[in-house]
Length: 323
Figure 1 (cartoon, rainbow, N blue to C red):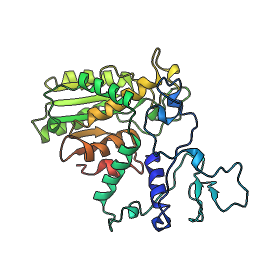
Figure 2 (figure 1 turned 45 degrees about the horizontal axis):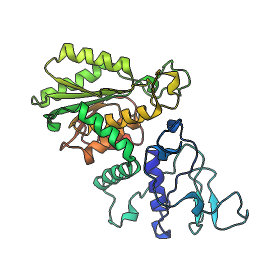
Figure 3 (figure 1 turned 60 degrees about the vertical axis):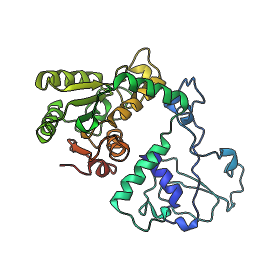
Figure 4 (figure 1 turned 90 degrees about the vertical axis):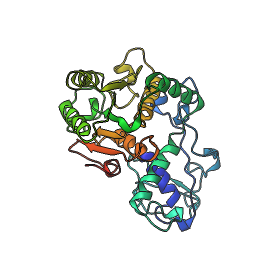
């Protein structure tokens, strides 16, 4: 979400596209998830294609520039104003991103309908997540192993469960405090049953989670309550027990950051084979799954049940079409 927001900031020049479109260049700082990368630098580009062919060497260096230079501007905070004629703009080191109101004026479409908003958001996410060939091959092999040949996306429910360090009151050392009142697993089951009542032709349910215990518990509930449903799992999923792999060594023995990234992106692609979703939209990850499924998924008319009591600025796109 933050990455796509930075892309929109560059494209709109902060709601002033007439000032000229900018090129977003990632810095070359260490990406924690790329620690120990065997396929490239320990940066974002260990896993993903560069956002542009331009390099950091192409920009004006703020460390050697004249303090009075009009070529560069360093934002001290995301919402700080700046002269649009400045050639090189350095974004704030703050973890927050600049909010762009007129997000798609740069497209020249002449409107900013909700239809274009979700499609352009999904397009930004798809562009940002263009994986390197080695990772594409790994994901493809996992998908071939996990997805049955006769799976019909129109008759499939996706249940991406986000728990562990996302929940209030978690006890995971080294993780940020939780930000979600995680609903009981019975709530997921309740909505699955409601989907079955709505569409009796449903045959499959795809269940994934970074939380191994929650996933196993939910699978037991499904097996007991809905034994006729075929359950599709992400076989080989690391399930590292946290939303990040940057502290992997503290949670999962013998796994690598690359395996976490491959597992997560495999789960995302698996859920592209579902029409119905039960999720908590407070999680940017599960919201991303819903947004991508609406635009790039294999099923038509995606429907989402959001069972989380909390939401974020990304949630409304995931919820579109909610009953």
